[in-house]
Image (cartoon, rainbow, N blue to C red; front, side):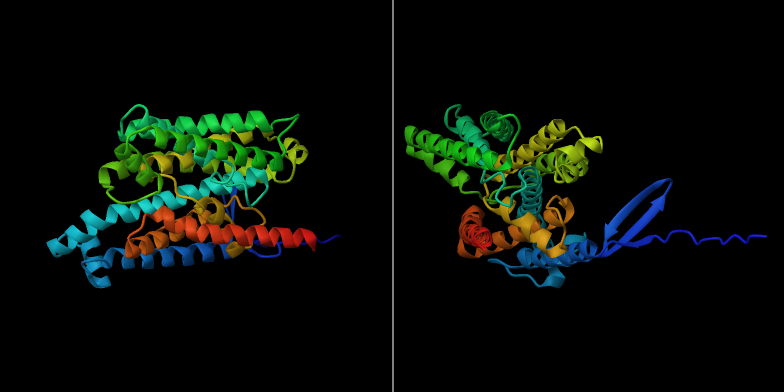
Amino acid sequence: MTSRTTLPPAPDRVDFGRTVWTWRRAGTALRVERRSVLVCAALAVVLAALAVLTLGTGSISLSPARVLSALFDPDADSRARLVVVNWRLPRLLFAIVCGAALAISGALFQSLTKNPLGSPDVIGFASGSYAGASVVMLLLGTADYLAVASGSLIGGALTAFLVYLLAYRNGLAPFRLIIVGIAVGAFLSSLTSMLLLSVSPQQAMLAATWGAGSLSGLGFEQLRATAVVFVVLLICSAAVVRPLVHLELGDDAAVALGIRAQRARLAATLVGVALTALVTAAVGPISFIALAAPQIAQRLTRASTTVRIVPAALTGAVILVGADFVAQRVDLPVGVVTVCVGGAYLAWLLARRYAGRRG
């Protein structure tokens, strides 16, 4: 008589070269890498510390205890609540939302192009959003939030369509997309400069100041609309992540897994452009967050792909909140600070890739 050995059930914890936690329920499984969870937790702690520091420093300094009391205690000192909640909190929340949106957009485009240089501010989509918003402000003569947002979205979408149209040759090569995007972005930047020179100095100064990217003068009214659109786009981003991960393996492998390659690319492009246009419409163009944040998040988590939206979003929020903290201390628009830091990062990235190819 043959005895039958009963094997124990498969454990929830699975190891694929790194620790992975798996939760199974109702026929579905959720796998989370432990390192990603720890990195996200650390980034959240850093973001919280920066938030308290930002809310408590300035012309009126408040201790961390008074900042936390003003945020969570309705009976706190009215002066502290006025400074923290009414004056400083909207700017902080804008920095978090915009940093996360730019980082997610960068992660989507870097995954699409399979290149760390494939961010929306490098391949011209951010320039398209800026050009669309500039047309609304300078030619139509309105600075209405909804009108500028619409112009920014239309400009970004038309730029994306033009870049794809010029780059498509029996398929879409990532390197060709980047080169065409850089060329189109340079053309649109020149067009925007021409518009600035063709209007009155007052209009040009207003548009140029907005074009530097600034979080000043924003309140809860603008934040509500921006946050609602961001949440919708965040859900859309989560929906396009899985197809993009498969597309990084190649079109043939993705098609074999049931992914419609062109439809997935179009959806990811629209979501990425919308995220960039949302930030551009709200605070003006802010460069290099979309370029740097996904790469930093990938190196922190040691992931094989850049399209990890939660680590990227937290990294982008930390970078922009930190940059805005510096910008407030030196009295400059936050876009100027990110350009200074991002330019050095871009030079390092290009040098590293060039040295790697020579080696």
